Length: 145
Image (cartoon, rainbow, N blue to C red; front, side, top):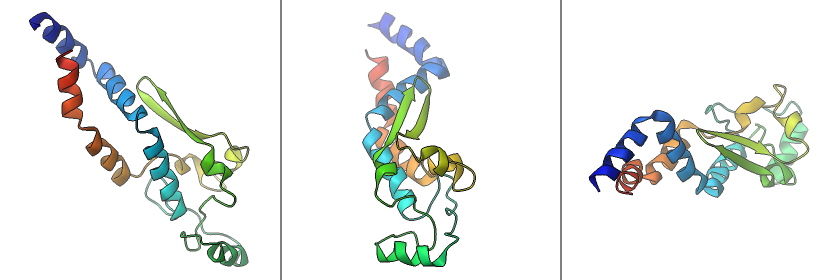
């Protein structure tokens, strides 16, 4: 048991291994992370916490409001829902890559609309996810394997 503890302590002392462990745990929360990301967009917020761009056409903004948009005059990147439905996250060892399989993704993530900041979580939402992870318990479990 002591040998396992020593081996696992060495393993966790490497930041890359710790990141892999956390990313692995985050992968179990993919649906929740995506819901938080699309929820931000629905109210006109980017991952930076800044507002999305305002619609350049006031009539379109009125149409969106009449359709139930919660983003005010700001873009929510949702009309039929295909962009949101295509959201996915690639959990690659020590990093997460957000994307959408929707054909409009390249256009919507251009700097003209919202840039890559469309994808990802605000600091507040990341903190919520990380609080749920209980990293201390994850490390304890890894140490006692």
